[in-house]
Length: 109
Image (cartoon, rainbow, N blue to C red; front, side):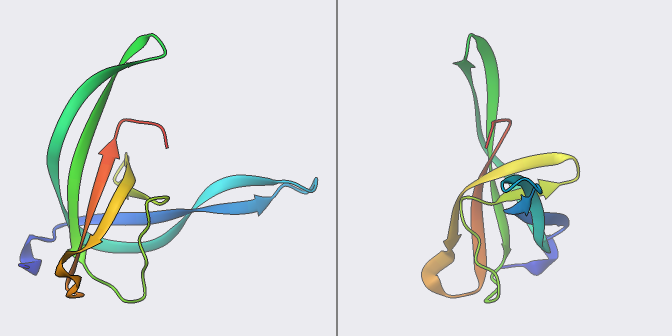
């Protein structure tokens, strides 16, 4: 992996439960890590959802592997004002060198 290509500063977030004071909780997003990565578009398509057209774009995000960080599909990634839902996280070749995330933009969690 050419780490010189990791030029995008992205934020990994996980859901966190915050007590609401009435015995329940509210869901919020908590920052897990801020890392350098590459972001490359993979595909895009449009579908009808609840009677209206919705665009979906998938991307491939590559970052350095971190032993202290376990990225899962229930997390999300932020890049500037853009929000990407993580669909899969792979440790390429199980070599502990890079993690590739397949993410989707423009859809609900």
